[in-house]
Length: 331
Ligand code: UDP
Ligand code: MG
Image (cartoon, rainbow, N blue to C red; front, side, top):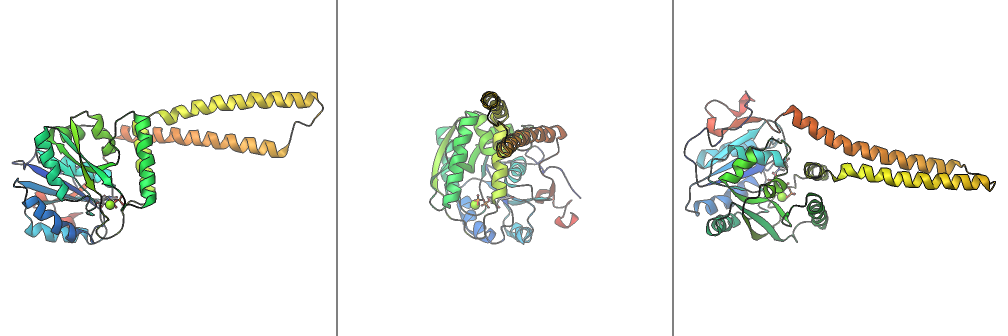
């Protein structure tokens, strides 16, 4: 049995002060550590809370462990997706499920310290803002490759989208109910949340934190997923790549004119204007450019196609809030 969406704030009962949304994909190694560290922090907040663990179609023992934790952590709620839908989709599922007045999204691998949630929560209340971005003050624990690619990504996105995307802001952030409602109301399916949230224009502040090393297990973000995220970010926020094709055509036109002049002059001077090598180089170069432009066009057409189909970015297999109706084995 399958449902399209988790139960949301409008469906069910009293709303807690805080919801913690945690996407998890194959996190069996880290999960016990996460619970051990997160629970005391939240219990110490003196606010009622819920934790929405979004199991992003894990194939390891994550769902089994979550079922076990469900038994003795009443504030835990599990939303399991049918298949691996990706980090951003998993967070989106969690945001839709969240019932809290405040909602924080955090990675499961303890790279974002749970203790910072308390700082964010207090910052939001004291400064009367809707969004508190967690900003990494120290990324020395990330690999040099990750730091450089991330740095380039944020620079590019700032230029393309003209947005003030706070540098090094990931997906560790606290949002008000109003903000999350605005996110949930967005029609697009492939949301890159760290870019979407700033566009909503809610008053915000930042809280710095030290990004730790992954507590256990391995990164679930291979290069292919990083590239996917970048492509979604660029195509979702900018038409600049499409305009690239126009620029290429101008450059191509100029090169063609120069070549023509060259050919005519060498012909007049009795030289040989043809040559296998130059022909091959020119044909290959321009074919490559054309394919690049087609590829770019394809990305946008694909995005439009997806948007038009309105197919959900994920399917919910199980929501522990309605566990009486649905069991994980019903999948
Ligand atoms: N994640 C997910 N679905 C995916 C990939 C990752 O829910 O397809 C979760 C993962 O379990 C973790 C968070 O997203 O809680 C960030 O992933 P990870 O720590 O592997 O990324 P990195 O920190 O290496 O960029
Ligand atoms: Mg991580």
